[in-house]
Length: 182
Image: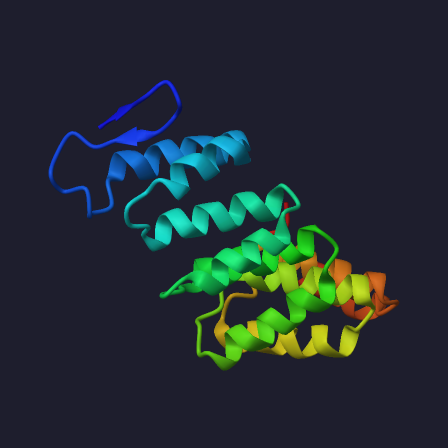
């Protein structure tokens, strides 16, 4: 595989229909750099896209404020995993689209996707910004049932949600019970 001067991908083998790990690595480099234009060129020229490449693009588009493009790409994916959902939800939350983040979280849960602390932190942040502590408390209960309440970022998000909504006693109780806070 080689790059031409126009940033196009040329395959040197006959497995052009397979996803090339080198192409994924090049794409990830542009994603890490925050270069949407170059990442899009690489992504659009991939003969086949795997879930890793699509998820990388969703993360990049969300971080760069192109949430509608991220949503379109998400909807075009044949297969979605927890990272796909989490990337889109985080993109919504990072761009102040809190209601959309909650709707996607509900849809994610309805689709039976496993939740992790990353997506829960984004959803708790959305709850905090929308001042809907009732849903935040329900999510806190879910976190306890899932056994992921000890993650530092999650503890911080819960404390922030409770304190930001005036539930100071709950925030203090969580803070005092936390052993892993940074």
